[in-house]
Length: 213
Image (cartoon, rainbow, N blue to C red):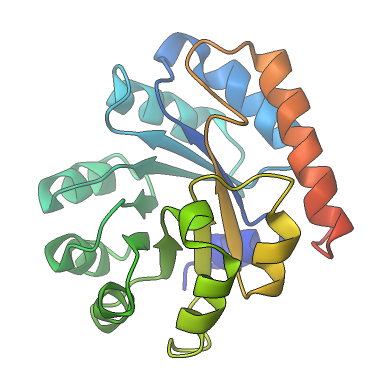
């Protein structure tokens, strides 16, 4: 496991999903999120000019912050991310070809899944972590049930409808990480508002037993 990812899991297992962000705003938003205590930033590839935003963030962010791409749907995109030295790949689905490409490139992969079949397939192909999506619709009890059949050392992130109001329930069900979309960042939201929303999430994470960030 990439030591940066191990550190993020231990200290800041919070992913900000920056869907719709532009290169012009990405650095200010990143600063607000990092100051609040987020450890991972995800620029989705269906954002405007995602490759330029990723390039800027890779240069701008401190080394301990994991910058990654989300909505990664094909192995060619994994290769392009590797060439940019973007270390984190996040998918909405389970595609063995994408997982295999991440393994070849020695990149951290958080692979989207919903069923035990998908979760175990991703694990078998070497996923660094799983992403249960859509988490809120599945619910903490579903996560707890599926977690029982997964390798105990494999981290599971929950994404989709996750917020301060249900963080404790997912934590108790075995979640190791959490992804936040529109409740933290949405296209055009000022950096100051993003930071305020992120601080609320971090405060709840710390309240339920997360490490100080």
